[in-house]
Image 1: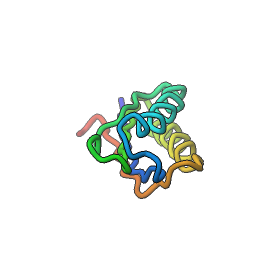
Image 2: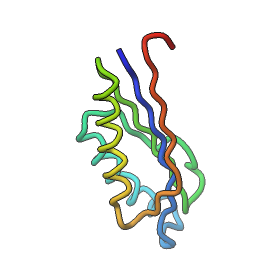
Image 3: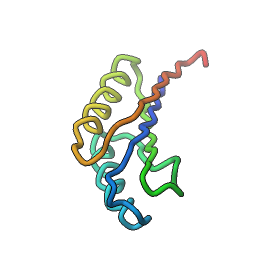
Length: 97
């Protein structure tokens, strides 16, 4: 069994000056990520209006499949024109970890 995690650090548009406006950007991204059968949630920068951190986790039998799913998730977030992707942190955990 292999587990992969990824954290996206994003800069939101200037009009996200309230938590309600921030949710309007974060919620559709999380929903789109969940279509890939991953666990996804806002995991950091929750008190900052112009930033968001979204975490993704996936479990699979093969490390190659974990990598493919995480690559797909990264392409989805990087392709969102309304946010600027600042960084992506990725980890793969195997049976020996």
